[in-house]
Image (cartoon, rainbow, N blue to C red; front, side, top):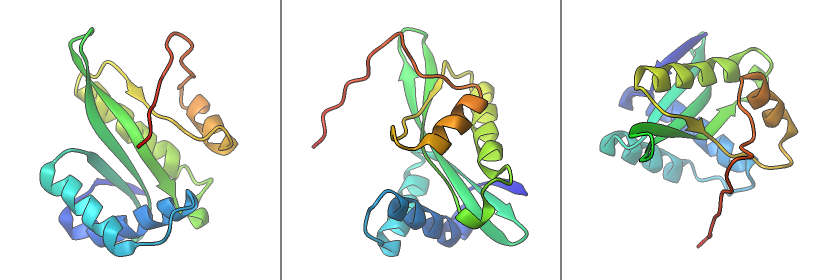
Length: 146
């Protein structure tokens, strides 16, 4: 398995994965919109995307968005998207992608990495806990959807 930083040359593979991720979350399939979204992220350099490749097949991706911790005066990152094809699950792909994110955050002197997942996504919760993440009992997170 190889973890690669996403380039424009691999945009098609990553777009397919992003589309499958959205379908997993009950969104309509729209490969063209997924490709445009990722292209904009690359063009504007406003996210960090890694893809996992086994052989010649892209089997998973993760996307980090930068933010900041003003109190710590350091960068921070939101692990916003993580997806592995069903055929590649339980092969360490998700762990490798998360470890790549951890490495990136450490190299960039980040204060923290955070994520959210559905309360029903028990498999993801087990993985995140196995990877050293925990629920944050020190603060409340509020949200307003539009």
